[in-house]
Length: 357
Image (cartoon, rainbow, N blue to C red):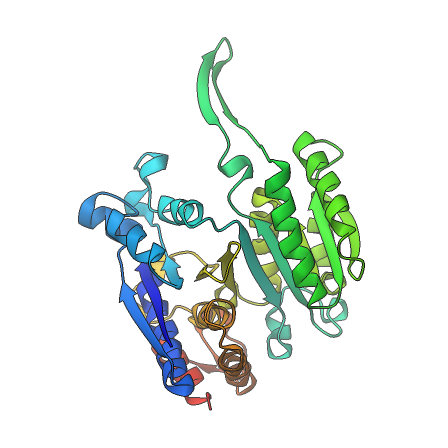
């Protein structure tokens, strides 16, 4: 069997962490005996510098012809002055839309070895937490009508939040399926006491829930959810929410794990095709210093193996190797603790590979 993976390193620390993720895919190729063809393409600021477009036609074509996309990170201050529709971040937004990837899966797990790095008190985390945020990815305010107009009170700007029943139903089913395969609890987060789009979201989720009687559904307003995440994150299993709320809550959850650099994500559609990327940014201030945490990128490669290539055992082995590295006290600078051993980006990547079977 041969699989094609499009590799988009991007900007800042993206190429550095991507090299470590590629090591994982090369190991999986040898371990499984299945060929994984990796083809690198430009995206983000690197693509702007090369051809003036954050998502060149060649890159999009390569992604469409692949079985999965492995993404690094994009953006940086050198491109901040560009118009919004020409900035590096457009590469990710356009890819998600073109590839019809409407579901963003963001796991947040507090490993026991990282408990002291969490900003939460030990009394709040008696047994850690393991939750999954399912975020709608291609609708809502990020993709709604936007603009600005001159008024008597000066310039006025607007962004429109819009969802259809179809958009809500498909992301709801993704979340219910995920909950059914985990601990059987789904928390749907909205602002139905204020927003009409949230009231639609809640009605559709309630309707879909009838098809999943084994999953316990609860609704929670987003402001309460933000509070509950820091008060008792262990109460959550799967969290379902819209685009903007999911963007904010997933970053909040990531900090509770001890380091945003550890967290992977998957953007999925109806089939097995997906785009996999760490949730951290391009961190241009540390680019080239061999200090970025590659674990988010490595775990994103594990999610790619699991969801797009069907290599569950290999993905499990990568997860175990990451936990092994943490258990042995190896850390990058962002998650350094007293008594731990400081490693650079390359060293951490090599450490995880050595712990693989």
